[in-house]
Image 1 (cartoon, one colour):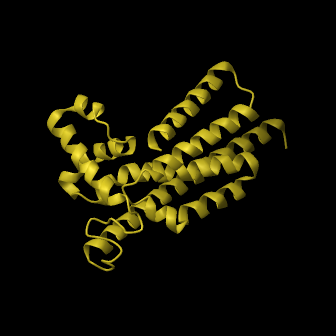
Image 2 (image 1 turned 30 degrees about the horizontal axis):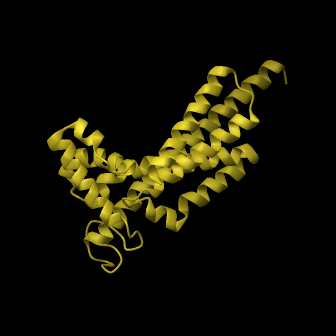
Image 3 (image 1 turned 135 degrees about the vertical axis):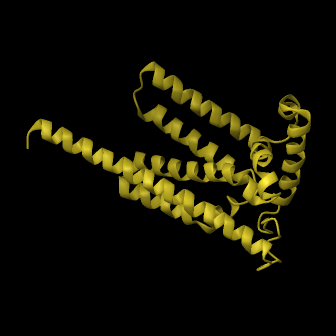
Amino acid sequence: MTEHSMIRARQSHSTLLLSDRRALIAAAAVFHILFTVAVFAAGRLGVVPQHINREGIGRFATDSGDFLKETTALTSVLTQQGVVAWFNDRAQVHVKFYSLCFAALSPLLGSNILSVEPVNLVCYLAILVLTYLIGRRFADHRSALVSAAVVALWPSLLLHTTQVLRDPLFIAAFLTLMLMLVKLVADDYEWRKGLLAGLSGAFAALLLLMSR
C-alpha cells in the first residue's frame, strides 16, 4: 500500500469513528429524553407515588423539590423583573440555568422535570463525552467507550440527571477540569491552544466553586 493510500485509509477510519460517535451521542440523547419522560409519566400516573410525585420529583433526590420551587421563583423574577434582576439574584448557578429553560418551557410543559430536561440533557451528554475523552487518554477506543456506556446506564446517575439538582452540572464541570489538567500536563501546546485549555479549566473551576 502506498503512503497516499495509507493516509486516505486513516482519514476514512477517522471519519467513520467520528460518525459512529455522533450516532452514539444522538442515541444517548434520545435515551435520556425517553427515560425522563418515563420518570415523569410514572409520577403523573401515580405508579409509585411513595417514590415519585406528580411533577416527577423523586424521594431519592431530597433537594430536588426545593430546587424546583427556587427555579419557579427565579423564573418569575426573570419574566416579571427582567434579566438584570435575574442576574443579580443570589440563587445558585444551577438554579439560574434551570430557570432559563423553565421560562421557555414551563408555559407549555408545566412545572415539572420535563421543563428542565434541556439543561439535564446537556450535562448528561457532557458527562458521557468527558468520560470517553478521559478514558481515551489512558486506554484505547473500546475501553473508553465501555467506560462511557457504564456511566450512561449507571442507575443513580441516570435517575439524578432527571431531577432538579446541582449534581449534573457539578460532575460535568469536575470532569472538564480533570480533562484540561491532564491535557495541559501531558500535551505540548502552542500558546493559543494552551491558553484555550487553561481558560476552559478555569471556567470549569469557577462553576465548581459556584455549584458547591
